[in-house]
Image 1: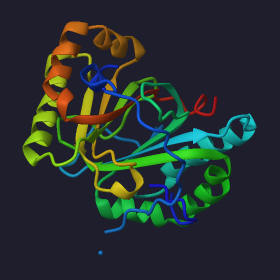
Image 2: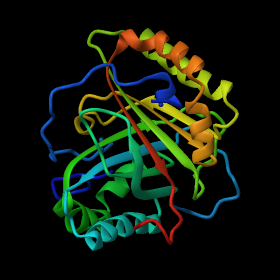
Image 3: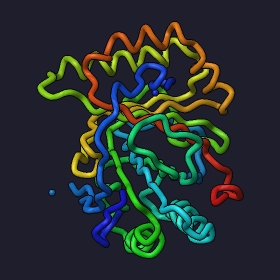
Length: 269
């Protein structure tokens, strides 16, 4: 988790389901996000299933225009190097494939996983993480947002392999909606995984770090073996439209980002 006060820093799959319902007024960059506290690179695994409380942490960055590429590469490499921290189960950072949202646009994404909220908090406060945020991230970004959620356990593994395509979807709900609406949306997300065997992992939940999320409260992350599988699901327009109709009236705004997990050698390109 990235705190930006010098402390720590499926359109289709789920945007097959949901596309941005309307344009929003321009949002000014704000970097006063508080770290979560509780008061591609991956660790070697043997394809172990996710624990009952796997924590998902996603950060979206917008790098300033005309930033020296060497500084962008340094940021990406430094973020990926945080796999060395004991608390980190999986981490990947790199350029996004495409952003399907307006007016929010992003250039880079970080996705990491932890076994507990305590581990996420420890990562957030770790001196190595703090240093990366201060020295490599803050100086070159125009905008940032982050979400954290306790993943559903749909039988997926802790890590995401290099070359996998990831679709991140963030939902901002209209005001005064009840818990039954959230449950309905989560059922729709799970239905996508049940309908498309191309999806190797799907994770969804409610964001528990609202101060850093620009009002987006629900998140999902779908993993595909590669871009061709992601695009095959995206092209099923009949299913996409039927799923949109189930939840369209509940949504104020949607952010959808597609990302390809880079190999360690290409993460900075």
